[in-house]
Image (cartoon, rainbow, N blue to C red; front, side, top):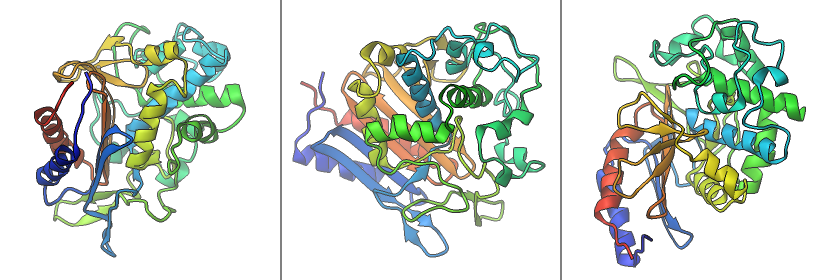
Length: 353
């Protein structure tokens, strides 16, 4: 089925998006139907001290949404024959993880089934900001900087036994990219994902050197005052999170990926194959870098999601009706109430043929 809209319906959808936002929402909402039918609406402030508003082309950090780019980058190496899904981690990095299981594969790392210890284990930890109380965020500028936080840890379980979301697993995938290519993870992703996808504004910026048209992340303290997240996240993004994108960049990424511009049809299919039931509510599954759910009536939905102090993000593709939507926010919980309402809005205003 195809989602078709005329100008009136598009305007109604635009007004509906404005109506579902709350007074304190800060971010950008985008619904992309095709190149001639899309909506991008901006709300709130990108920089609070000078009351600089968010705009449709404002860049936002997307936290763990970056994992989708890391997975795509790994798949380009598989496409080039430099890796396979069955390649053992120790074949690439034999001397880095003394207590890890030798059977860990690239597939395990991509699908969060490796069992490696996570430097921020979301099964037992809930305060990402607390990680940096003893380790300065300004020292975290490349994937190797995360190794002291987990490299000598012990396995959580046998590889492939179950799903356990792992930031460390994606740090390792970034190290694999660097080992194979001889260039930095960031340079490789910019050259082999961002550029061919047409993501003109996507990049990895230092949090203390944000360029124009980039939103600062904000955290509300116990007194109701806002502070920036500059001391709450690594100063430079890594393979597990921290890229900056615009809503337009996400449209370009989904379009390029789904049209097999980045990867072959078979490898793209592999990324979206539901491999493992997760332990999250809503019955989602996970493929390679992407969450997958079939609980919405429009069939399978593939999505990227991220949340850090001062950052929240979700971007999705609804396969049955060929619609993309993205919500970017420079607050830590800004997207979640909007997301539920946006899905209801799209579902309620649909016009299938």
